Image (cartoon, rainbow, N blue to C red):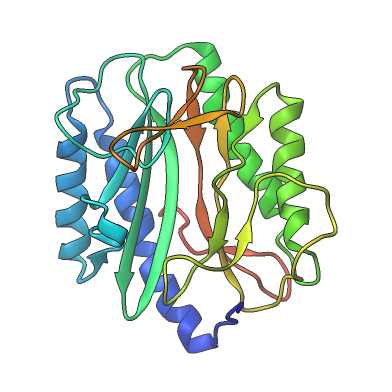
Length: 250
């Protein structure tokens, strides 16, 4: 069931979204050669707790950390640990914060030092594909209008969209209805209603769309070993322009 939020609930989601966006920004600032992925996780944990919130991901279905840190060919759900980031890596950070009964959820991919032009293009196309979808996130449109806009932009730039993982509703639960694929023909799926809050999250591979699941049960990599990028925000459907609830601070 798709849950439309009240004005009071939307205010609470703005609060959660603001903390989540700040946690993502903190993680992004830490992406430097010599930093371990575990150090990023610890900093995000302490920041979220300092804001009076709880990390949404910690112990979610058994996930052992507060943030997903996915490096290079890791698409999503990379588990932080002793891995040391090095010059030329690209690092996807996915984070959620829970406060006042509601979650925020967002992600982005960051360069570690100097990276290749093609890696930077992958990051830029992935981010822009979110905004192509975002432009379709308007009252009266359908879910697949977002999906189609993401896919069309990604594929026009020579990259592939991951199909096994999708965006989703977000609110009192981190994953709610509806699912929001990053591919498909326009004009399908539920209508977008004012007060819906959804996480739109393109996951984009430099090579083929094929994936492989790692033995840790979480980490998902590209099957061909090429780089992947991820960009996500929680957004609100309004009477006009959609609102990003996890927007970076000005």
